[in-house]
Length: 328
Ligand SMILES: [Zn+2]
Image (cartoon, rainbow, N blue to C red; front, side, top):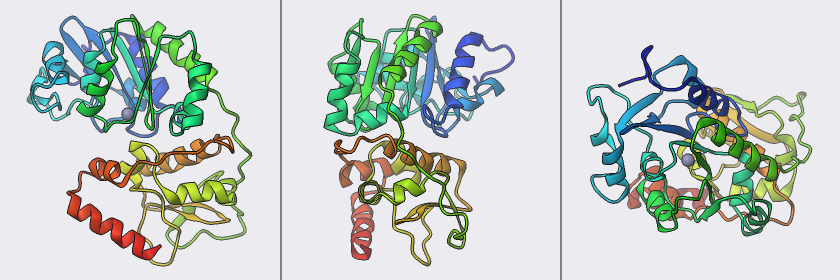
């Protein structure tokens, strides 16, 4: 059942969901998801909806908690579609429903926190995060494809005391007995992982953006820094980048159709027709790179990991990769 005026969801849970969704340093576009367990029902953000819209209704769907837990442990297809309380409505549960179900805590928030991503994409940052989060009930989860593969990895070290999961090359999960507890955990992690952004400038306004594209605000410093520029062109570091912008970013050139690209030395450009999710993801990359300390060494997703995210069959993906390499 979609969220309606008769929604049983506590207002503070809806408010937290909206607040997280409206902060681009925590959630970008349709990324991230929150859930609350009420009796034997798990209410979770629907796939493709935006947390930022939580106050406006119908972004949450109800699934049978026991059924979703069974799917987390291997039953069904892992989508939890079969667990929908109202199978006649059109929304699907988030692809990440299974780990929300598996975690026993009543309230779970999963966000694509920029500072967590910046720490979690490289070994130096992961080590730093372990020190900074010492004393908190935290677990570190190596990268797995979102959905049941990630849930299965979380399950291998799951215990009842853990309330924070740093998902390497992905994001953050915080869970607790109620919304207030989860909100303060998110704040505590964000505070401890804070990284000062390097100075970034607007691209030179005197130079017009390439036809059909707009400059991305504050991206000139990234494109003017050889190392950061190489990182943007060289790979993708977390799932939603791949899903919305494709693997890595291309260098801009005439005739390009990509939603976002790098003009080395100048700035990042975003296509005028890009979706809001694509714009949010381009900004996320800038926000991550401008916080990256110079001695941290990001590990990109492998072509196989990118391929499974794009849900292309291996052959089609290999062809696309080959084409990209041929252009390089
Ligand atoms: Zn996620």
